[in-house]
Length: 81
Ligand SMILES: [Zn+2]
Image (cartoon, rainbow, N blue to C red; front, side, top):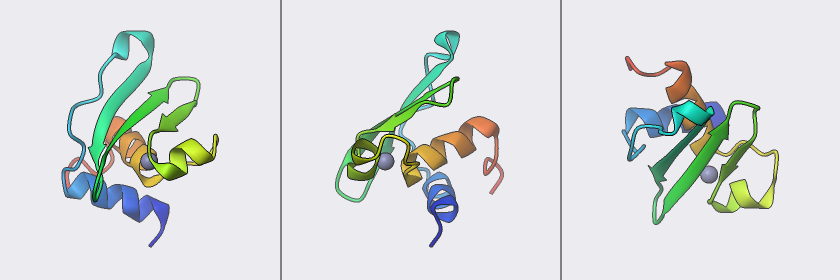
């Protein structure tokens, strides 16, 4: 399954636990429910992203499915699925 579809799946299953916050500083923070853990995702306006899952912390520029889900949510994609 592609990372894009993985991200969509998270949205469809409503596994984003809180709405993105901290809009005033152009950074969005939220939590995503994983299989066994809860992950914290940060997306900045400058394109910098981070996630507390294994993939997100191991690879600085790697977009894990949690970050993809957040980007999809912020862009409005997937809100009507
Ligand atoms: Zn992640």
